[in-house]
Length: 419
Image (cartoon, rainbow, N blue to C red; front, side, top):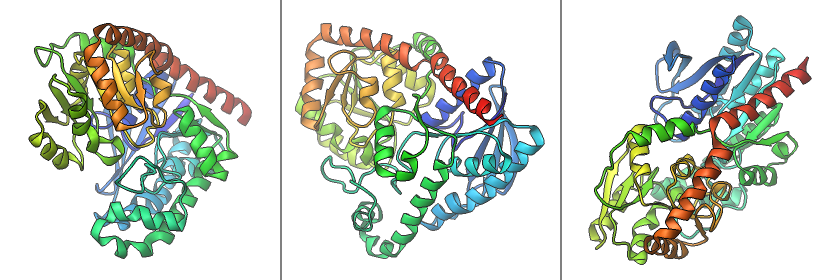
């Protein structure tokens, strides 16, 4: 088949969604399909620039996006949707594309529009809550663990405050636009032939929060990880530190629960070095807390994929304090595949990866997470048992070969129905 993957992110510089799209593209190519990647690049000059990554053809779609709140969002959503849909429609006609697969917030809606215009099947992958939450994370307050119950005007009045901070009164007139923006996204992706939700939790939440999405066909297929390549990269790395250490790897942001990280380490009485690999808006807050702590906390900033594999492979435990509804964390999948024992908050799709007391430890509060960290620190046998089981589970459930096979079967079903 000739398949078009439209994606917000793609290697070499990207997060987990981009690497998951790459594994899908690589796996489809290995199965004999022709794959073309289209990646919108906001805040770059207009026009299409052809590049490649690992032999995969990548068309970068330049688009303006002024760095002004809300105005920027309009350019990256409504304006981009129309422009990108037109480009995709032309590309489908010129190259005989047989199926389109949108991968994220900037690409799903225009993928559906273009595919519908071209009378070919279209799939959308949902990795977080962007169709039902303007901020994509359901977080409406900086305090506590409660998530937003729904995007009413009243709740939007609350959720604007932690995002706009002191300027929040000036943002209130944008609420009608925000609500209309979400409705457009929901109607758009509901027009797909199939929606892939990467975890059971995100599938259930999307059905509950959007009648339009609830009426669509939803398949649960996880993100793909090349387990063999990950293990090969890790095996070739030297230990970054001479002794045991605990690791946090990810974005330093409120939805990741990183504001609780230092407090968790202190409550656990952890006497190992704690390595925090990542960057984000909470970096300064965490650095200040770490400087005042009596624990050995080391912030090393953002690391690339190879360095992340090395730090993960040699860690004695991974701490995952996420308070947001994690759809399906690539960090957890990779740590599991490398046999690293995990102490995690049970949020979102995390239980699809971490089975409590079998492949890791799950907790409901930061205090419970600290207790689990203390427990892992003091029990080498538990760490070994959980890590070994996690390796087996990750390979069986999340390896790219199995995941790509599921996606391919979906493609075949959809194209058969369109004939």
